[in-house]
Image (cartoon, rainbow, N blue to C red):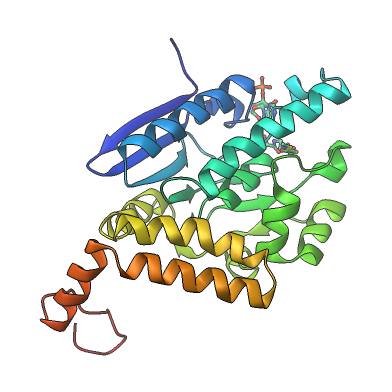
Length: 260
Ligand code: 1HE
């Protein structure tokens, strides 16, 4: 069956490619369902996954041709479907990275916001033209993008159509790694390899506990943190890794200017 998603497993890393370049990887129902299947497959067989776009762009967001036909209730179900898949990316079984080049617009930016790490090349750009299109974000952007870049910046982008360059994406707190043109996927894979070497339980705690703790009060957050800390540190994996450090078998931190 033809799919708008490519999937490959390279060792412990799943590579999920948005593959509808003739429509700038605009996300229609078929693509979002194929993405869901790829995310589930990666969650079952990989330690980490990278999402990237084929062609000249990451994604032009919601498929506007398909969206124009929806009734209000269909619109709600459509948005909730995106929410379920993007939540599986953000708070699921394994960490996800996005490797961004070209446009990450509307729903494309929302998809990138669901991944834990965003790597962008210098030609990437970000926009939320929902105001111009007469719609609102529906892929979790008002929760995730607003938290990453602040609601004020997001409102500016939605109201005025402001486009952020990749460098502005870094300043705004959206992009964590900025790389030369064409190098986003390679950098994301390099980071993914490091993540895959972590203890799986730590990775799980990082992607699941950290975002939830942000929703808790100070006191509840600290309590939740203690539970996660105790659970991870008593795992056999942690005990072996702590021993490796004490016995000087562990890889050293890449301290700037320090010995490695
Ligand atoms: C599309 C879409 C799309 C391109 N839905 N068909 N997203 C947007 O408002 C962004 C709309 N797209 C663009 O602004 C531009 O396409 C790009 C800046 C991303 C790329 O420009 P360019 O010059 O490379 O491509 P193009 O010539 O504009 O588009 C090529 C084709 O892709 C063309 O179709 P064709 O049949 O005429 O060749 C476009 O119609 C098609 N195309 N983007 C459908 N988005 C869960 S809620 C989320 C809300 C949103 O995401 S709102 C933001 C929607």
